Image 1 (spheres, helix red, strand yellow):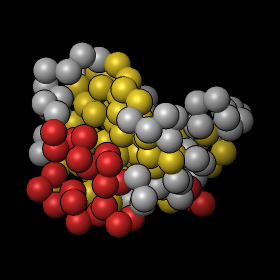
Image 2 (cartoon, helix red, strand yellow; image 1 turned 90 degrees about the vertical axis):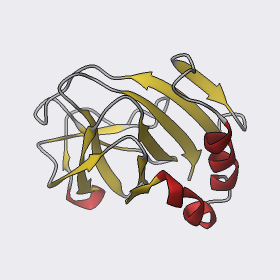
Image 3 (cartoon, helix red, strand yellow; image 1 turned 180 degrees about the vertical axis):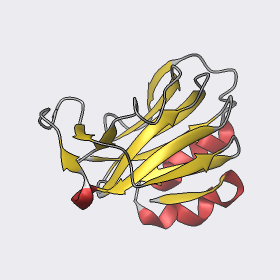
Image 4 (cartoon, helix red, strand yellow; image 1 turned 180 degrees about the horizontal axis):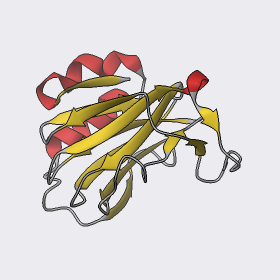
Length: 148
């Protein structure tokens, strides 16, 4: 997991071959004016999703992991709390891996919570269990899905 400010995002371009293209897109678009929805940048390997979350408590936020994709999450309209637990320490839920949505959900609360404000980002790799979207009023955010 990486948490940093957007001004440092380019420093992480070498972490994945598709990060440079994702970063270029992020730098060249005004996400405040973009509609909710998904944009494919490189087929299914690189997607940008503008989402509006609903209010969510720590108890309502489910830990999740992705096998095939890395998430770059950027809150736009407000501060978001994101839970983190290493995937190896997540407690399996009754829900199996969903290959179509590339997601596995887990039981219990996250071990750690991080505050991510507008102007910041969080990167979650397949080994990172995360519980995003914790906010009292919901948040508009950018989620970049990068093929791992």
